[in-house]
Length: 625
Ligand code: F6R
Image (cartoon, rainbow, N blue to C red):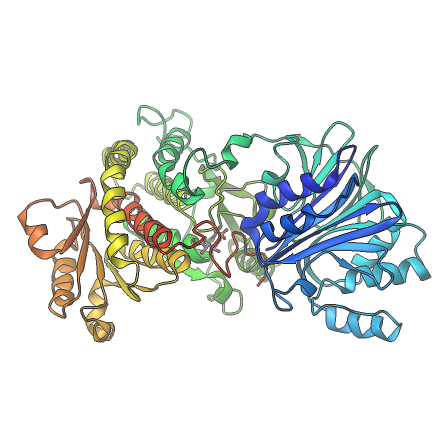
């Protein structure tokens, strides 16, 4: 996590850096800082807390410098205090460094450098870097670039770094090693950032550095090297990202805007993944087109999915679809668990990594572990890897041979909403494509499901206005509630988990998602009049069961909120409050039932006056283990 930015060119750097950091604040907001080079010195200003604190400090300081680096922090090593805020400097305060990632061997390096007389001022892992560069400049390196090159060969871990020095006022050196870093090419000016939104308002010509690369940015251009010091030939590409996509466009929060963008996301996915008339394409004999080669679908005996958080919930819906539609045994793992306790090797296993950011360290590490442990084994044990991501240009995109690009557009709110729906759409398409190849369901059934999906966007649209009013009203009543339970079964069980996660992460209210039938095996003891229960009850295989489980909660005095398409007296009799959704096939219902839960969490958090888009302790892209 953490966000880094850098600028070198002809304009005043400070405002450009601050504007860039604003766009990266979703990556962390424990502290922020910038460093510029001006009149022969490094000027570093840092502030604890959100970016506006740094902005206020900078109002009193004039810095016309045309080179600088900036950082917004998600604390890993050391408290979120100003003395731990980046940029960090060497003892003589000639070199400033910002870093995103973790330097795993920082303790040893710190001890060595201390013994050589370097004075440390923070508790961070990052601070070893400016001291190391200073040491190497003193002893063995003849330029800043060389010192950074030598330094990175001493560092262990995953990191992206930006470096400036008072003694090299026309150079900005950046490094990528398993943490994202992009370079933007302007006219006589160059930018770097952890993510493209920070630079897209200046230029769309970007170069994403690869692992093990270093770049030297000067007002004259960009040179890229590998860690051994060899010069590499690299060209920027044009980014397809509209700066408007990273604005709120009249909504109070990004999260609300992103909830409202969901019908469009489903439409974009339908257009990309399914043929327009539902008929089979002649070349592939299938109405689904994910762009994966035919052999990709052959001989798969089982699927292992690794993911974290909301992506893990999407994967659970994916498991349901892959097993029920395509008949493929599928396991879903928390990536952070799987990497240290993988399943036994089974031949012809497809491994899917689901990560909207494409940068989640645990998911990438789990995939890397799978790749490694299968190397050198017989063909049938070789890793068959697929990534499902909203950022195909991410580290995941570089790591796996096949990608399903989810089509949510950039998501800024830290709580995932539209990217979740986009992941669901990818799983519908994947499961149907497998079903078509394996002939586990008939072409007519496949066409019927696709036709059902086509109605979903307008149904979400039809629901949104009513659901907003109702959730706003409920938020008023539940703003002080301390515990919530979410119940679902079958394909809607993961939606109960997702509803609980949304509420927890943005409203800080304790919430649990449970398979409705599991309540009576323990959690029912939690229930009383103070604990509302949200039950997702969609007619289909488990409707009656969910209703019985909900009744059990009501009998314990819990206030019952039903997410259901059932409108008649029956629903009003069972539930104290209704969050109605349109009536669709149970199989497609998660795309509809999740929306009122997102709105409920949003309105409760907004009502509590919380920072919906940047909840405490969280970051959008979790690039540390
Ligand atoms: C929840 C949320 C997180 C992410 C998780 C994985 O709203 O955003 O739980 O889902 O950190 O992130 P990705 O999908 O980028 O791997």
